[in-house]
Amino acid sequence: MKKIIATSFLFMSLFVQAQRKNSSTLYSGTLPCADCSGIITYLELDSSQKIFRLEQTYSNKSERANRVDGVMKKKGNQWWLYDDKTIALRIQYFNGNIRVLDTRGMPISGNLSSSYILHKKQKAKLSQTAWTAAQRGSKWIGIGNEPAWTIEVNGRNHIEVSWPLEGKKMTLKNAAIQQDNGMLIYTGVEQEKNYTIEFLLSYSSDGMSDFIYPASVHFSWGETKLKGVGFQLQEPLPQLSGKWELTFISGPKMTIPAMFPQRIPFIEFKLNEMRFHGNAGCNTINGAFSALQDSITFLQPWQSTMMACQGNGEQLFTKLLGQINTYKFEKNELLLFQGKKLLLRFKKSSPI
Image 1 (cartoon, rainbow, N blue to C red):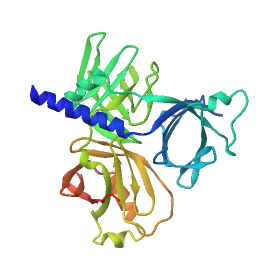
Image 2 (image 1 turned 45 degrees about the vertical axis):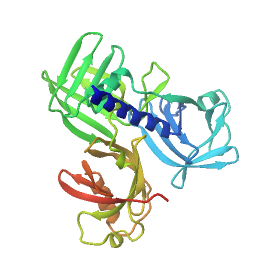
Image 3 (image 1 turned 30 degrees about the horizontal axis):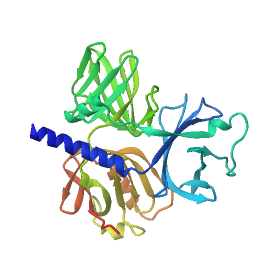
Image 4 (image 1 turned 90 degrees about the vertical axis):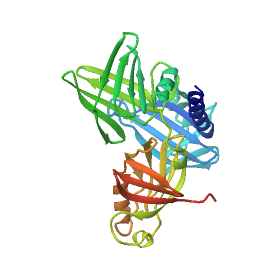
């Protein structure tokens, strides 16, 4: 009993710490669109660190979010949001919310002016169902309504689909796993019907509450098609947090400075957001990652600037990063593997 209580306390402590460390504020709304029914927009601002994350989905055209990470710069009473050197958005604070400005930095007037307001939102916290699943060691959980359903993926990648109000339950074993355009996808056959379960680490609404969830979930099985929201339940090891500088790359027998004459690649992990950013030797990179106690996946595609770079070091680095699936620590080093093959090695950068 003491062991169970201690484990529960540790898990909750990690979760609470992550919530407290996240000093950002989330806003959302649907902006007008000339050739779609609306641009579903989530904007996360961290004014203390002067960074932002922007996710936009063009409704009725695509279900995949376009994601941009960048820096905020204050211009009078406005904030200009930069993706590298390009201005992604001009905004200003407005009655506790955010007003999106036009390309001249002016408020948009007329009948659609209220449609350019992004409203402050709260991020969803773990429900009792998700908390219980986390205690069982599950990796993901998806939840939905009409009718109520849950999808739970455990540590062995067995999937349990249930409709609790109807007393129905289905266990899916030996699911194949792949990643595609930022999604983790589980596929297989159950009762002679093909099924697909997609977990996407992008903001999503359940359509019934005012809370915003960190993941969206799609499930199809024969003619059954469900859409919902979800959580990645388990935190990666805390040692993963921080900034890591490349010391070894599999392949050419060259020194790291020789392969990367412009800049040594590095990666910095933000565990409370399940995001990473860094530099591949020339261009900056940003994206999402999924990690558990010994496995890690850098979810593609990630964002990158488009500068012309010397040599082939950056191309090799990003190629290998996309192949990584496991990790471990040795003293002050982070080792990234494809299976048992070491592809990249990093050392922890000392805090400034």
